[in-house]
Length: 182
Image (cartoon, rainbow, N blue to C red; front, top):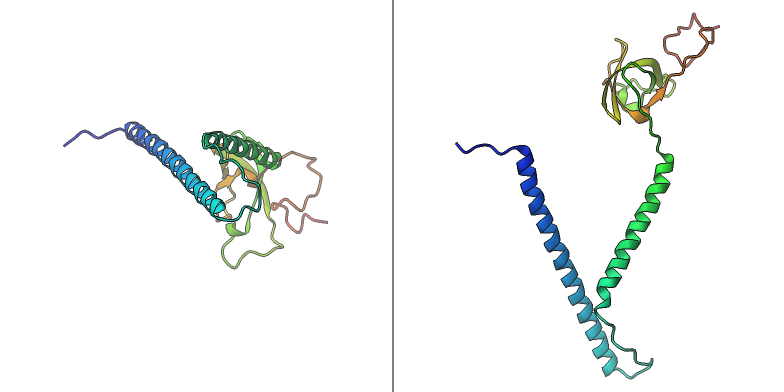
């Protein structure tokens, strides 16, 4: 029985093959583009020679400039992508919690059993303790026993809990009962 390859060796082997394939694809695409452009220009030039000259004749384009144009297009795409990213990053919030922190969890419609969701149900539950940090984007929470939903939440559905006065009456806290309300 042949020895098994490690995952890293397999990935490195495929990574080299992927890089080679991408290089060949880029060269093929560049050659195809160049050939197509040359054919189109030649056809257009031939049509212009055969037609009555209405416009002044232009000299044929220099095909060596195609690589330069390709580089310009590529750099413009990178600049445009960077602009879009900077605009999108304005709306992102970078929040990290530690194990043991208290948070509010926002429940979305898909967290409720079918037929039990209504828009008047409390959507924010808490404060809940963070039990485990799965990654920067996902946290495992300690849910109350009556909650029958997954205990892993995305960071966009978590709001930091800030302790306030104990006497303050808050309808946002699901632990309060109607007898507690005045």
